[in-house]
Length: 149
Image (cartoon, rainbow, N blue to C red; front, side):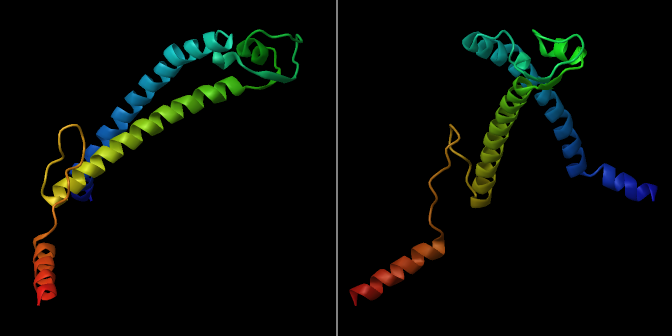
């Protein structure tokens, strides 16, 4: 049983997956910082609110009753809030991660297709023009010779 576990845990794909999880967690922290520390302040200045996370609607006041200037203050008072600023922040984070993953997978798929075709991708990430297979060229030549007769 120990031998089987060792084979499972030390397989290349298992190690690759572990590395991917660690890098993904670190990337998530970088994106969270990007959104919280760079994007939100800029959007806050544009919208006239210092912090997007503090955008909320009080559904039911707590003790002491409002008005509350921050979401944290409202939640500490026990108010029921609709915290749409937190939702917007997390949505922006999700969109950034989704875009990065899309471009990463897109690039990997291009490289895989190029490797399967026996060519390397061109500089700048553009896929090379596909050359017709030898059989296709021969069949076209045969068709042309038959048309001439």
